[in-house]
Image (cartoon, rainbow, N blue to C red; front, side, top):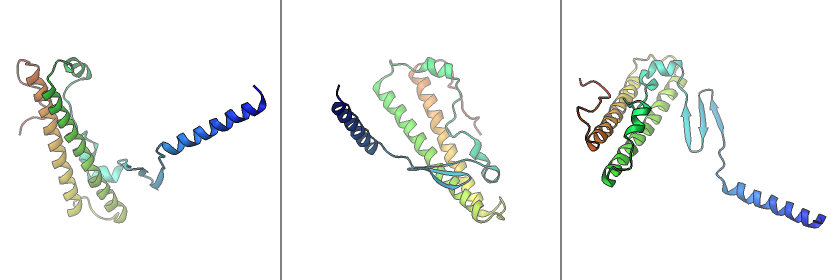
Length: 168
């Protein structure tokens, strides 16, 4: 190849790369403070000592599962009906939504702690947000239990389905 062809190919390659990079979503990291990192459009909050003291339930996994990975793999199959698959997908969508709803509560408590470092954990606003987080966590756990019950019933397994939490 002559130099003009090589030059043309390089220019064409550069232009294609420029077009491709402009089409890809660009994630910009914005440093807000030591514990917050904004990723467009999500903001991740890393729990720290004061926040975990204010919201002890923040360490807990909202979407609990009593089964090991081996048991999960054993029950996932393609033989279940479309209706069951749609119901299961609905449960998972609701779980995901509930998990996302906790983020603003966690962020609210983080802002309270940052603005007023002297507020005791027992303050009304912290109690409110902690209570809301527990309520949402309970709903998420209930949905997880419904998923387990649905799978157990669909597979016609003997006995009672495993319980995520003991009944009060």
